[in-house]
Image (cartoon, rainbow, N blue to C red; front, side, top):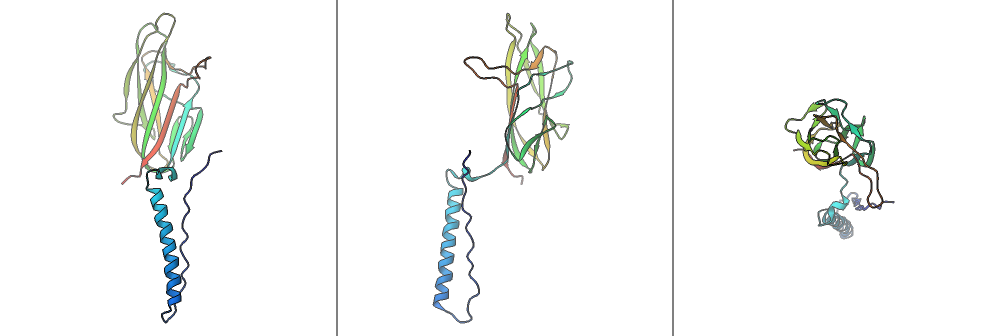
Length: 212
């Protein structure tokens, strides 16, 4: 079970109403209560903005993967990459298998990696790009070559990069891909005796900043 680290929120002192005439006792009580309160506020602010203060911050994040093979039925045809596993989620979710959806507006860092395979004896190409709310994001296409098979071993490569995205509340993004050969796919692999399994697709997204 995860242990949450929290800061205690100082309770404002209940000072009541001052008497009509000056009373030293009333002044001392009010001054003492305010002194305690501001010491607590200073302590909280010091912890929050200190070297390890980020451990108290709860920001949106999500981590998702696919454990299934993803293939192209036709060449030069766009397909949305899909997810079937949620590893972590806090204000960011996957909707309809492919739509990474944010609850809050802000700047987000999207990171992804795909395990591509080529079963052909020639190199082939893939393109990967981002759609935001169903619309292609200008400048987001990555163009990569997948190596051919060598002997009885299929060609393999991992493609990965990241983007900063400005999103409004309830916006969603998708990763899309196409290839010039149906011999190219995004593959998941089973574990072996000395290494773990391979996800076909891994994606994380985290909140970076609010928008100005």
